[in-house]
Image (cartoon, rainbow, N blue to C red; front, side):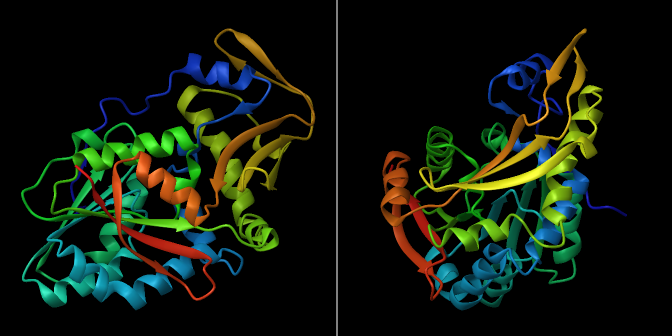
Amino acid sequence: MPHPIKEISETENSLSLKELNLMLKKKQKSIPTKFLYDDLGSKLFEDISNTQEYYLTRTEKKILNKNAPSIMNISRAKELLELGSGSSKKTKILILQALKEKNNLTYVSFDISTKALNMSYDELKNISPKLDIKLVKGDFINDLEKVENTINSRLYLFLGSTLGNFNNETAIKFLTNISKKMKKIDFLLLGIDKVKNKEIIKAAYNDKDGITEKFNKNILNVINNEYNLNFQPNNFQHIAEYNEDKNQIEMYLKANSDQKISMLNEEIEINSGDKILTEISRKFSDLGINEIFKKSGLLLEKSFNDEKNYYSLYLLKSNK
């Protein structure tokens, strides 16, 4: 019997067809990144995380393995709430550590994808009868306020450097919302990818097996299904470029032919060579990320890094 999933979004999708229409008419066309993560997209991202080139997941996992006792000892959390949980494979490290020290633990898996939530449950369901697993389906940007409060000490988790998908304004707003929701006894554990050699970064988004290409193109299938559109994914090429001025990967779908997309009783022209932005992935310096913490009402308790300083985990408290 499937584990129950609590849906907290008022609507399945918060983006109107009119808004998407305007985004595709701009000089820099774009599709919101969250559409990458339908059920197939969530599975493909799990596959990406296991590629040789994608250092982020294995580096973050290595930091967690080394520092889980310290993280759980400082946070003393009785509940873990993970935003954008995916399969929860990395978080399992913290859960196992917590269960060594506590009689009972609650884990709340919060994701936009039903597939991801089911993967999370399958990963954790046999760990221990002392673990209470809750699955919540929603958009963590828009639906965070709807997450139930708890009197218990809570460790918020936002891993995978997902914060890098947000521009500065959105990142600060998002972290501010978490900070406001946190009690004095709560912590946030945030995973952040750091500025490094650009060739290492570029390779992570251009794997030789083409999994990232499938992941990127799948966004067109998602919006076709959602809005009854006629995008042809094979008419686009996956492009992931590193913008050195902004220290970010920019992932695009580049049209390889002229085409017309029927939408709202009109046809949107996409010319050969046009690029649709599907994702940014920012890379942070210590100075840059600390400025974001300051503006978000967060105080750094402790940071954890790998030996190459490729990646960092930050344990944070609210300054309220």
